[in-house]
Amino acid sequence: MIAGELKSKIDNLWETFATGGLTNPLNVIEQITYLMFIKDLDDSDNRRRKDNAFLGLNDYKSIFDGEVQIDDDVVVDGDELRWSTFKDFAPEKMFTVVQTEVFPFIKNLKNGEDSSFARHMKDATFLIPTPGLLSKVVESLDEIYRLMDADVSKRADIRGDVYEYLLGKLSTAGRNGQFRTPRHIIKMMVELMNPQANDSICDPAAGTAGFLVEAAEYLQTKKSAEIYDSKESKDYFHNQLFTGYDTDPTMLRIGAMNMLTHGVDNPKIEYQDSLSDQNNDRDKYSLIMANPPFKGSLDYDSVSDDLLKTCKTKKTELLFLTLFLKMLRVGGRCACIVPDGVLFGSSKAHKSIRKVLVEDNNLEAVISMPSGVFKPYAGVSTAILIFTKTGNGGTDKVWFYDMTADGFSLDDKRTPVKENDIPDIIERFKHLDKEIDRKKTEKSFMVGKKDIVANDYDLSINRYKEIEYKPVEYPPTKDIIAEIEKLDKEANDALQELKALLKD
Image 1 (cartoon, rainbow, N blue to C red):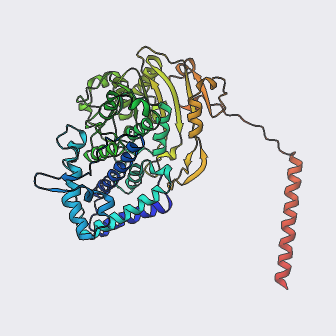
Image 2: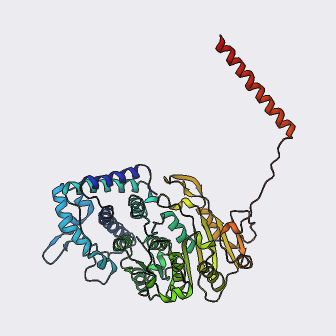
Image 3: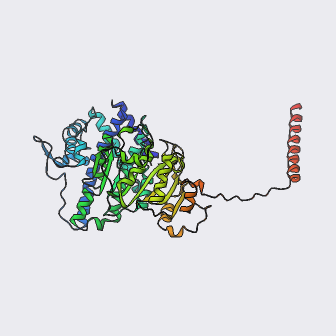
């Protein structure tokens, strides 16, 4: 979460673009992302070189080594393409180098490869108009990175954090229900799902690829031995493990850059309307993590027929839930964010998808989140559903958790606070066997399938949570009256004293 001096620096960066003549918010965000990508390429290259040396390997080849071919006619010194080199150039030289060398270099980084990055970067355009503006922006971003480096815990996904904050400046933010998922919520969901190196992971509404990025970092941190166990497993990690779909070309470019700078060479980041007939992915993935759009425009006629057969509705949140079940293979798991209405909605479509989750699959958990999680973009109340596709039932007990704090204030400012349920959620979910005997007055508890069925498959926590009322004892009425009379007398005496002083 962006706050304090870092927030101020980003605000100043935004103002720098405005005064420099670039005023379209989406263009600003895209240009910032390109430059951050260039900076991250340099940092990532240095980090991978060091890791390679630490492991005693000598086979690392830097993309900046020696002379680098920009296009058919231009060959330059690779070191000149590094952020750490050109940031110290005079404005005019920096502008020329970035515009004619560095930007074409990143556009053609995967040239000749059938990669999502190469396809999405074809339409990328360098729009910063003057050397002065570029120099100021590079200086500002360098300072932002310095601040992020000062706090390692925030440095992990700077691009996601910055982009999340910048979206708040867009008048179109949330127009189609596409609210950025806070980084700490993504981290929690990834931790809960515990991805494996042999998983096949998909986000059908990927946006900037936040879930995929966090899953990649989780695997690289905790499953590195499995990833690099063999050439086959390494190739699988880089080329097959991750899939993301979106319909926004800008999001796709950012997502592709995001994954590349987080160590995934060739993820499948593709343009696709996941709800339409063009999506043929069925029974394919072992893990889906997503925050699909909750509202917005929907071309009902383009929605896949097999989704409508299961859940006939125009509500995207219900259609996406249906889609997740279709895309998962048997035994596949899903963690997704849904608006609270999904849990208790009374329409036929609402009830039918909840029944499918409970009766035909294994619904494991419902984590109710406070409404302030998505502020300042929206105050919508949401929950996380965790389930496994079985196709033949399996739900016995469902774990409910009443999350009331996420480590940040629940107002528009979202400043850090001490109260945070996330560590407790992760700990309890990993030891569900200890949750069986918890009372329904506690933070979390189990609800049997029989009770859920009896309540028409209602999954709202308030349906099952019991409130413990503690009796409050008050003094006898005569004592209360006596106390009131005493206070009245004291007030009247004070008033008379004041009147006497005024007469004098």
